[in-house]
Image (tube, rainbow, N blue to C red; front, side):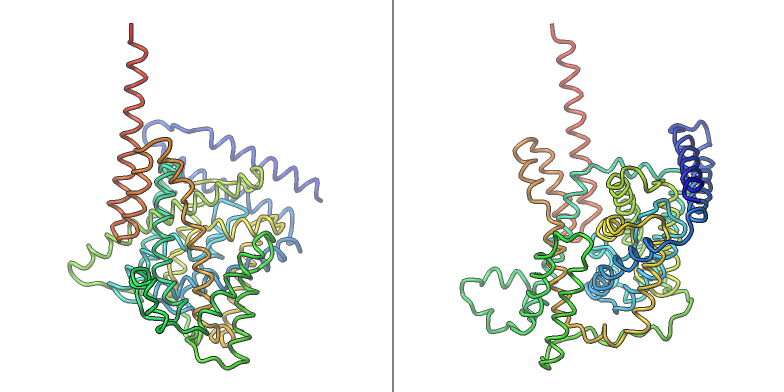
Length: 451
């Protein structure tokens, strides 16, 4: 049976490899190429699942990644001013659909820290329902790019500009979460400016600090155990201590999925559509880019065994976002944190990611009350760790030493993201990278034509 499955898997990969050699389709063939890649990939990947059958390895991998995803989904939803259920719906329902129709065997999807700044901005301006509406926009944009065959264009985004963007996201998360960790309403800049005066210490809720630091300490301390849910362990311990000692601190609150149903989430009126789409479309493009980067990274980690297909992955992410939005969830993307855990935990097929979604839904439905007693400061501790990991200081220092234009491009993307002018920052960053490329080309031509 295993030999048959291996032969079918090899044939499937060969057919997909042949399909992907057509990098430059003629005339109007781009649309057909995208559709053909999606159809071929899905047929071949599900043939592999059928041939291999359901496995214990996939179930265990799904369980492992679900334990990592539960606290992340709840924390990211709350950080975007959304109910915890919005993150759980995105990870469970959106994640299952993305895995079913996606282009990677190991990709796991859900709320992403890199998207949270823009989701927060949408919610702040248009209300909670805007997050679900943005998920629908992400779905339409992602499916369109995949069907048209433009999935590989995401590779054109300079890695240094992307690193600047993630650094800006990390700084923004720190700005949001450190006051929550301190249990204080003081802005982070106020704490920093008056740090040595120590007056801000009177505003600190020390029980919240203990919860957050406990989670951060366990998450960082056990980070070397790649498949171990250190964040979940930290949050369970912090919740247990706070609950048993009856600490009076802010908690997640009720996680209610009883009213879960299909619905159109959001209608804006008149000119508001323009301002809504001005935020939602860039969010959709970032979701697509984040998903492709994650899928490519996990494919490299697996030695090319994930069956990665860019256009199919975008199609799957689009379906996942549509499902999430229609059920009231937030936008989602393929995320390297979850995907790498899935691959390292021994996943064999995309069924592991589907199991992850099923287990998330079961946890939300059956243990919603337990999730509700989690201290918000504990989740803030987790997000502070994630934020710090997103900040790429070493890359910036290296760019300053080697190429000042690259450093400026990184800085433009980071500052633009931090200040809420994401598109401007990314455009300036990409423009500076392009300028550097042109200057190098001109210098090479000058050397060639020199006497």
